[in-house]
Image 1 (spheres, one colour):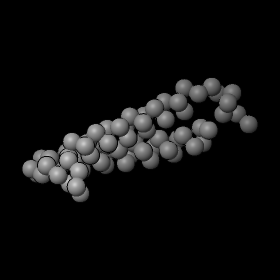
Image 2 (cartoon, rainbow, N blue to C red; image 1 turned 60 degrees about the vertical axis):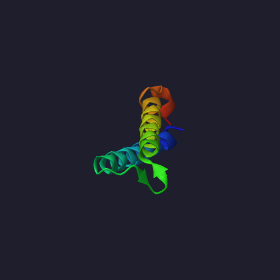
Image 3 (tube, rainbow, N blue to C red; image 1 turned 180 degrees about the vertical axis):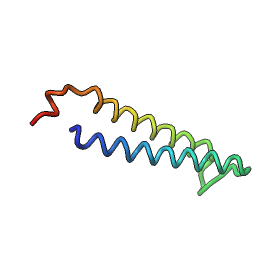
Image 4 (spheres, rainbow, N blue to C red; image 1 turned 30 degrees about the vertical axis):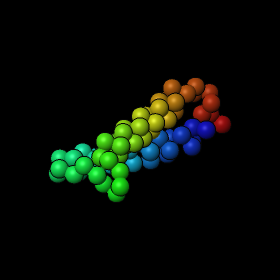
Length: 70
């Protein structure tokens, strides 16, 4: 399970960061809508992705060392 959560956490966290960064830059440029979605919605999806990625990585970091041994 840890072998799945580690890359999943990294992937979702990076995707969330990119979405948040895109939403922030679009909002600074004065855009209120992007691809049919309001900018705040894209920002919230990005934040949710980063939080989910953090939880996945937290589970991996706090896992029992005996579970990682063969």
